[in-house]
Image (cartoon, rainbow, N blue to C red; front, side):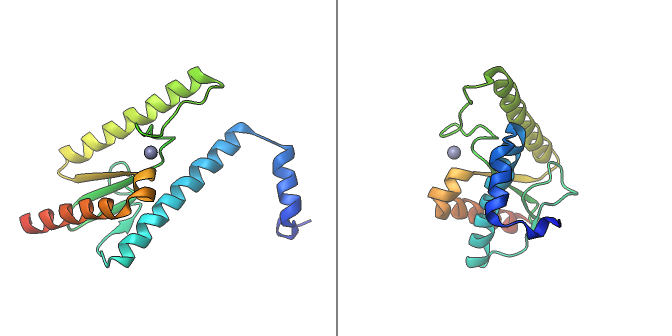
Length: 153
Ligand SMILES: [Zn+2]
């Protein structure tokens, strides 16, 4: 039977009878970051901020948004996966694994930012919760940086 004929009901039965932890976690990762990215994207469009592209693969760290003229890399990070100081947490089960995994993510983020800055890029970073709770201050920070870069170029 082709997959697309599955009803919503049978889909949810399938996923609830095969609870694979790693698959669930991947789903959480993918959906929360996609939502956060879409949120920023909507704000950029609504505020007529142009000149960016998404997921610039040629740039170190593949920023979620990238302004090529101003050389600004924008990252929107999920609070759980990137260890937000305000709302990040370590799961209680399988704790040693998560401590290691989340520490590695943070380390990689820091390395990426260092690499970008040393190559002459500006880096701006938003947490998932900041964008959700205070998008206007995120946008203000971005606009300020854009203005500064435009003035200096
Ligand atoms: Zn957070």
